[in-house]
Length: 224
Image (tube, rainbow, N blue to C red; front, side):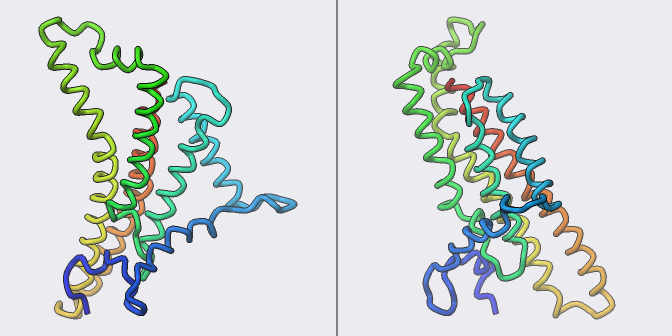
C-alpha cells in the first residue's frame, strides 16, 4: 500500500531500509551486447548501428575531429537511455527520476567545460558573451543574460530529464491505482490507456536521453 503518491520514487529498499535501489543503475551493463562472438547477433548489430549513427551526428555537432571526441557523448546517451527504459519495468527503480542522479551527470560535465574554457580558451569564452552584431547599448545586458544562461545550464539539463521521467511514472501510478475502484467493464479501457501511455513513455525515455546528449554536445562545441 502506498503511503503517498511519490513513494514509488523512494530509493530505500523496504527489506533492509537502505538505499539499495540505486544498484539498479548498473543493470544496464547486462544489456550491452558483448563482442566476443564469432558472428554478431541482431542485438549487437542494432546497437552498433545506433552507436555509429550517434557518433557521426555528435562528431558533426562538435565541429572538431579529435579521435574519440564523441565517445563520451555516446556513453552518456547509453547510460541515460538504459536507466530510463529499465525504469518502465515493474519493481525496477528509476534512478533518472531523481535530481541527485541527473545533477551527477550534468554538473561535472558543465564544470569541466567551464574550467577548460576559462583557462585554455578565455578569449573565445569572452567573445561568446556578446553575439555578433549586438548594439553597443545592449552589450552589458547581453553579458548578464549570457552569464545567467550559462550558470543555469546544468540545472535545466537535470530538471528537464527528472521532470519528464517523474511525470510519466506518476500518470501511470494514478491510472493503476484507480483499477480496484472502477467497474469491471471499464477495465479494458484502463488497460488500453495504460498500454498507450507506456508506449508514449518508452518514446519519451529515448527522446529525453537524446536531448540530454545533444544539448551536452552543443554546450561542448561552444567551448571549443
